[in-house]
Image (cartoon, rainbow, N blue to C red; front, side, top):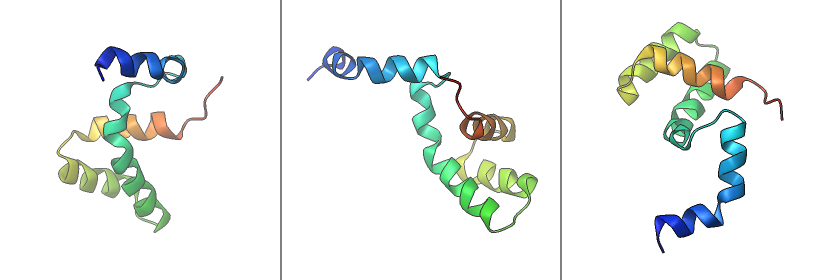
Length: 77
């Protein structure tokens, strides 16, 4: 199977993802967002959660805030 074959098989899905403002690279942040939700549901403050996840995933706090905002906002399809 080639990259082209995968794109053809998933064309509709990828087009919907793109039209919703998503990116293929967002898959990298799924575990991060799951961790965020667990920590937030236990009552921790967002700033503490972001600081902890920044260290754990070795990415900037600004990126984490951006991911949280993108993943929490409802889509207008």
